[in-house]
Image (cartoon, rainbow, N blue to C red; front, side):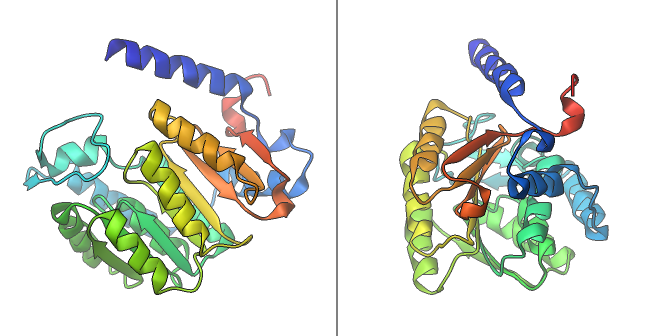
Amino acid sequence: MYMKHIIKLVKLVEFYIKAKTYKDFDNPEISQLIYNILELNDSHYRITEIENIRKELKKDSRILQINDLGAGSTFSKSKTKSVKSIANSALSPKWQCHLLYKTINEFLPENIIEMGTSLGISTAYLAIGNPRATVTTIEGSEALAGIAIQNFSKLRLKNIKQVYGNFDHTLPVILENINHVDFAFIDGNHTKEATIDYFNQIKTKSDESTVMILDDIHWSKGMEEAWEYVKSQESVKATLDFFSFGIVLFDRRYGNNEHYKVIERKFKLWK
């Protein structure tokens, strides 16, 4: 475990050295997009409400029976977990959720698919990013899906459709019943094969206006290989690597097989 942390730290340092800020790109479209997502201080009054729910979850001692259908957890292999242990260790952090919100607000997609609801925090950010959108979120654990539904109710979010079940069974049905995927957030089964499969399935209902986000792209060797596969696809015109997650763009305005490691300008000490 100690060696695993060392390897991740080395990768993070390598990422930091290679990462660029919005000012480092010649393409004005990609530069503006990165600026809007990373640099603009664009908040929303509902973010405070969502973060208050997060705080409650971090103190919630209820015990859940978890049926993990994916690659498992990096913090616990137990089938029984408390809500607070999940909230403290497995939820997307506030900064990442805020970037999700700003990405949705930038592109204003109408059909959004999220694979991996967990306790519903990231889902809530997707939902407020464009209140006119429909967010279809899939969760493999019935216990987690139940907590998420409670949180959506507390937040009075009406544009979320919660789907419970194995991604392998539920995703094809969802895709069969929609004409187009505007935005997809793949954050669930963290295996190479599954990630590639979900990406390819969603791509069948995508076009150049579609935006995809893959979470935990450096979580494991398999996830890094899945990320490299995605980058290699001819239809993918550009990717933005934020280390914790990656944005996939199909619009040729953003490049032609261009792949960028991106960091907020304030963190580049010599800029």
